[in-house]
Image (cartoon, rainbow, N blue to C red; front, side):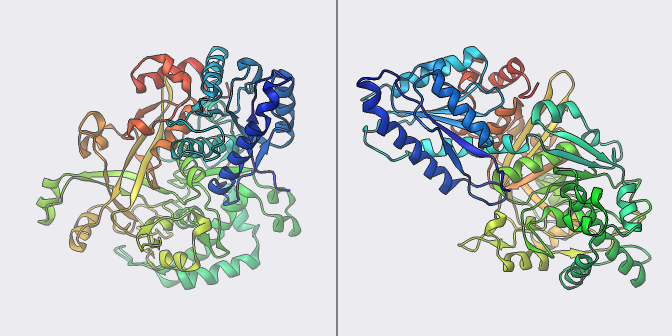
Length: 582
């Protein structure tokens, strides 16, 4: 049964009958229907399916009709609401009162009726009741019979819907921790209060011995394993073995079989697999209802068994041996905070995400000193052995032939093949991974827009979000080789330059690196910083660092009541209203 979150549309109206209400019925309901059609055409779930809108059975002129609408929305699995109106309505009698439901109001900018007056009155009611809502109001005046949705209104509607769907779709799902804390990394110290109070999620935990148990007892689909192994042999080319004593052919064949099985087992642990029940493993077939997860790996697993790099990279990609499909979210080293940012990026875009170490800042002088080449600016080396989706190489191309990461529903078999062909799989360096395995190795094309982002937990404050929009860059081959060989040439690399503003953390590239709050980040294709800001405000997570233009910052209307400094507003409003689910 398809039970995807739906968007509720609430057409509110002036409740005075015997003339006023009757004259507005058609216009108000038409506004709701036009909005539903626009959303269905322009917004998708991360699964790729179109979003369904549910419209109230009647226009809403008072509290009884508001309550009836609320009951319908509960039955229909509505997770966020947009109220629309071209006219005056009764403010607190008609607003959406659900405290956990992201909500917006679109007040029609027309002179015939005071839609803007209702919008302002309703926003005052939301503020007074402690129910933050987003205000949508077009800049240009429209005629009463104009059914077009202006471009500025469209942009806000889409941004609100993407963020609201993310909030609603996470609610009730799990983060599955496979293992525990990797090498003392703070992000893999799971904080259940963060997941519960800010995201509405639960935490599930399995020891890594559960993966070993399923390997040893063969708790996986053996028919699928044969398909997966055949696909892997055909599409996953081994890279150079950088070990002083190269691994034997027999050892590598054994490792390949193990990492493919690990990939299937991690997926089954998260999502379940009905085929396991037919094999007599009913409990194992159910999975953990996990929308995201992480694998500890280092060091308790990787000192003895093949690493999780292949599993993480393939699961996070938008394709595998079963074809093109929705990417999963698996955080390397069980960095749950980075995993949540991967989840944010995927839910907002439907695209695979790239997990990175924020490894090195290269200044112009440093690059010139070691390579003889002077770049146009400094840049950051983003590289990690684990869960960088293969899509991150940029071998998928748009209609103009430019390198991109596509939403998975736009991926073609050729796109997937190109990404596979651009990736090599060098045997793991035993110095790092005593148990062996393979690491993905690719180079991200330059000139691709990316958004670098990360949540950190701050004692006394709670979660804060960092955002840096920018672009990947190309380096001459010999320069790339010189710089890359100084780190680890077996891992995937993205050379990244953030957009600079000339002040604060974005004064220069070095300042971005210096102000980054952790050793990891996520890069999402495209400039999605504004979407992340809107999403964070819904969850009451303040943004401590970003380079998004002021005109694109869209937060609940009541944020303006917390002072004139927009970032100070964010901190004060989030502290005042508290976590969404507390």
